[in-house]
Length: 370
Image 1: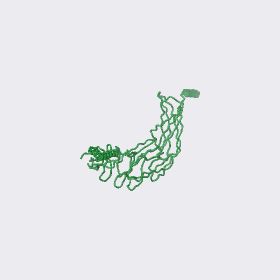
Image 2 (image 1 turned 90 degrees about the vertical axis):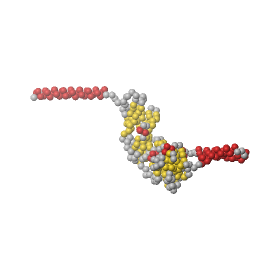
Image 3 (image 1 turned 120 degrees about the vertical axis):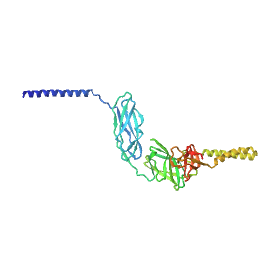
Image 4 (image 1 turned 30 degrees about the vertical axis):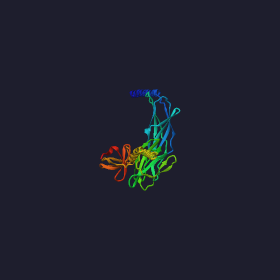
């Protein structure tokens, strides 16, 4: 029994000593552990109170670093919902004193959204590792529109029609081609209701501004092409209207959508007719046959300009486009070699009239000899 109590006493002493050593070691480790210093401070500067589904919007944060010598600050996102992060999350940055104002762009894809948590990481050339800083998301309201029947699916600060042109498409339809610009929207979402056919002939979408050339095939009885977009500044629908004024010339190119005084052909024709008139006056006045030769050359040139266009041979499987553009919309493909009426020409393309009276453009390389 005495031996048992003696062994118990020795075990208790040993256990007490081990615990004391452990506590001493833990305390020493805590005393030697480095203190992590916060180097980045993030705060919100500008956040919209409300956004609309389909709207492009931005938020701006202020980032302050206690480290002055660094390469860059990288940002990452997490926890977002109902938003598309634009521009790969790369902010537009401005310097304000010793801080950075970083603006991030998003698109609202739902009427139930959550902004992302934003985590900032400081990098420098020496490879030092600094603690990250995270800015938690703030709540934001989102709504979905109850669109009008003529809504073109665009939510923007501004949307403007620059130029337009209407020509005959076939026996029952006209084609309207127009250019437009917009601010803070993606025009790729543009869509018209109630038209036979439509599409983009060119599109340039950026966060700040966008532009496009668009075509719409409409009924010949239609006298206007109305549609509306939602203006985020006025917080209301803005109605736009393109009057349908059919031009006899069916040539439609990108240059036609820009204002111009006269075509080169008209200028050449005017000059030639002026020379002929001058020659006739001089012939009647001085009665010298030399002026007949002076009249003949411009007269032949005028005759060539006014000469009806010939037919053109088009190869099998050739694409007929609505506009003379490399990526222009194809509305028909020839099933065999065919002779078509040639009614115009522009660089790299020939304008033809199909047997069904539709008008289109075919590449020069798709034409053939008889």
